[in-house]
Image (cartoon, rainbow, N blue to C red; front, top):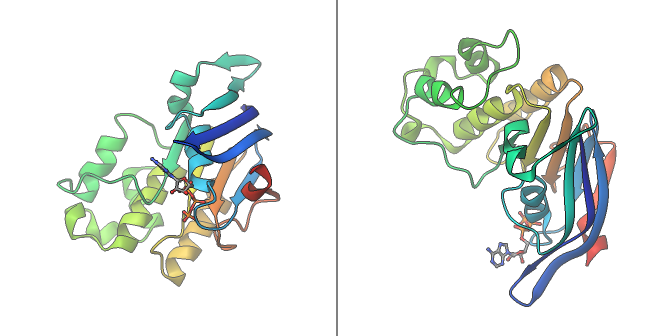
Length: 205
Ligand SMILES: Nc1ncnc2c1ncn2[C@@H]1O[C@H](COP(=O)(O)OP(=O)(O)OP(=O)(O)O)[C@@H](O)[C@H]1O
């Protein structure tokens, strides 16, 4: 999997958030998008994932030499973000079953194992509405990282996590990251501990 950005820019009304972003993300790479609050990290991550439209430039996705249509890229990636909501009426078991209607887990990962890996096995029958913010974040990370997709897009992945939760996140990445492309938008080194490539969004103003 390779994602290429060519002179990509994003504007809201009259304000350019960033311009002339030309980058290539390679399979197996670990990339951190860094910058101060409001600099455009989340916006760039969402543009890469096709969740929002860029204002100028071009983005292409290729796998095994074949182009992927931008409208199909959602099949190849998962997002974990603080702003995507879980369905509050579901129990944890139902939330996982719902997710599995759209994406498979990695081979050998079962719903039970996914819950255990993020320390939520005792909450299997609890409704999401009664979960703490840190528990919700653990589920989002499990669903994103354990899905069988080649690209993981993680926006502030340790939001609301306690120290044990941060360790859980880092273990999931180390154990299940594999040869996948991982892009993290972050201000916190604990979140991008595995990223050799650092992209400073402030460069693209
Ligand atoms: N829908 C929108 N309409 C207008 N402006 C927006 C919209 N979404 C984001 N912005 C603006 O774009 C800029 C970048 O926001 P973004 O959330 O990408 O920053 P960030 O670097 O991820 O910030 P943080 O570190 O606080 O999460 C901000 O100035 C924000 O106000």
